[in-house]
Length: 434
Image (cartoon, rainbow, N blue to C red; front, side):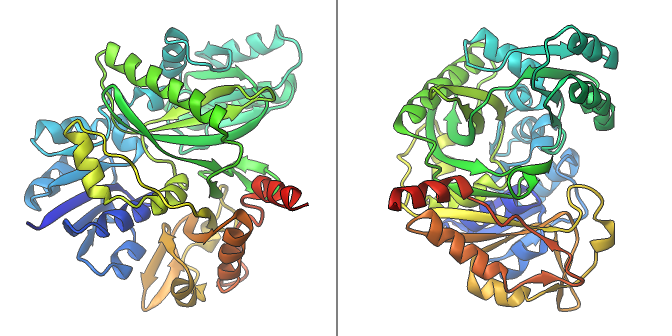
């Protein structure tokens, strides 16, 4: 029987999900809202994209799902979760993978999430909730000099957490919360937890769960973790900071989370993302939860999964939890962006991406803001595409990704990417080699 799947997302995460679903023997056709050109062009099976739609165009998406007789909708994008797309699809009798609006509040409302963590004894930084600029400035004034994160309570495309290394910077960051509009109207001031970050991902069906993978994102725009936060400049997996001791703590946290949501009558079905920090004594702290795959973490974890992904998801929806099978390769994904991202990159839009066809022949590439026009690839966004490197270790994976990236540019030297993705594990690798 021909099966049609609809993926809700537009960037690199949509591309890797499309890649996994299209590998399934069951899936004959794929729809992606809004999707991107690379998904459509390189696929050997029929793919429809809807670039005129947003992931929050709920009524239109429900109509597409009905009209196209969609068998499964994968709600993979945060704004769609926050809008309650899963709820609307379920109400229309359409099978959906992705949390309800209430379960997804663990991402779209950081204040609610922190209070949830406190209630269910999940290790998290101490925090202060603020409802005005004056709230935050008065709080900082009365504190000893310290380091903080100032975080918009609502969704901010991965850019709503501002680091402040002293009281002056903290006050400046508080003033910047208004730049996030409604998302920054309420915000948190959190004490910094020092250590090494990682991301963990779990498949959850109510109280049942299974860890599907770990990754290490590189959020800041420049090498050495400098500059402003972005949606993610690259990722590596499996990060060596995630020891067996760390894995055990993550499992305990995910268990508490799944059970806690169930107790609050918000049963969770979908992917849960735990953004964690390992401190100097090896304790795991939860920096954030997200109610979907990370981008670009999905691009390094999903290629390692050997299961038929459609079978995995549909089994989960029936309440069973098949064993996840994975290969043992190390993977690095490097984000290729328009110069100027995450700031103003408007002058780069529409420029030709040279060498892109050579790149596609060399490695796996997941598209995002790259558009195909008049037989040429052109820039159409901030994060353009993601280049995947694979190997037996971090050094091999990095070499593959960066050798491939040397083939490509944006006219006028307008391509930007970090050259140090996976650097922590690379340092460990060479220390171990002696």
